[in-house]
Image (cartoon, rainbow, N blue to C red):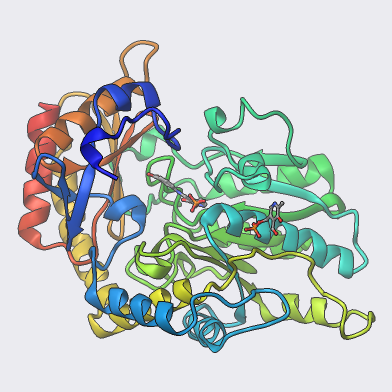
Length: 435
Ligand code: PXG
Ligand code: PLP
């Protein structure tokens, strides 16, 4: 296949303005460390770690070697009714790094699959507990839980829902983006009482009909909306009081982004289920996971059906794929060996300081950050909220900086290996482009 003769028509690109892209293609040909290279040979700083996936930097030789070896040893093992040790060992390593009590790991291949797996797990759990009427799923406005039927239904980003009709029965609490908290560094001091909206949702439907609440510890896709101090604690209390499972969707916040292994750890709140994906294999191979409290797993195992019967009729052909497991093991080794989570914690204040230096520039309405995640809210053109971030991101790309744009925000998810001078360059590029 010669790239020069390839026409771009056949590929229907995901979450992409296909018409615009095919007129103005941005083709990435290779990557190394914190940089991409494009088909014009330009070097571009990866300001989003891929899509929040590649914190340890691109093309890590340790991951390449592990994948290569795995492909020559066991390329695939059936995920159903048979196993391979890589998956068991990886589950144990993940369990050891999760908050106390969460130590049963179900593998998926993406964040969307993790979302739907966790929601099905919650409903099935209550059914096994004799509470089959607890089925309603609660999400939060501006939440993103992937694109499958469960995930988009609990999600709260309107354009991701409106074309697709009905999913499962849901309700939503409001988001925590308060105008008075604009330009807060890290966690806002006010807004914890917004969690009490969950009480209103419970009053509306009765807790006996509600299976779970799913939230991102900080909302990623909506533009790094950081929880107010005490907010997640309050959600935890209300969920416990009403016997509602609390699911943290840590697809972005998990595996180091917050300067801790999980957002749960960073924010000091323990949910019942944690969803993971993006950073698990450092982006090299698709993989996700759902980590449940041990007694949730035990509830499934306590069924009275014969032992040869399934306890949870759910799973994916590629759950715990041997090659993904090999990549995840190598990726975890790197996180440990290079001390990358501590590094995120060390660099986060530098990033915060530099990012907030953009305050006061024209059209910057808010700046938010947590760990090595940050976002800018851009004042929209009248009736065209998404256009200015798109224009900014395209100008950044021309200047050798890749950032994500979505809604009225520009988003940053710096590689864990970022250096101070790279943060300076990134912020300078943004300053020039915005000015
Ligand atoms: N949950 C959360 C919290 C996510 O952030 C998903 C689920 C879905 O994961 P998959 O692997 O099915 O895409 C996500 C993914 C962005 C951006 O720039 C965020 C995501 C994906 C692409 C871009 O904010 N989040
Ligand atoms: N569709 C068909 C026809 C299948 O046979 C399968 C799996 O066997 C699936 C969908 C689900 O695929 P996966 O397990 O990769 O999610």
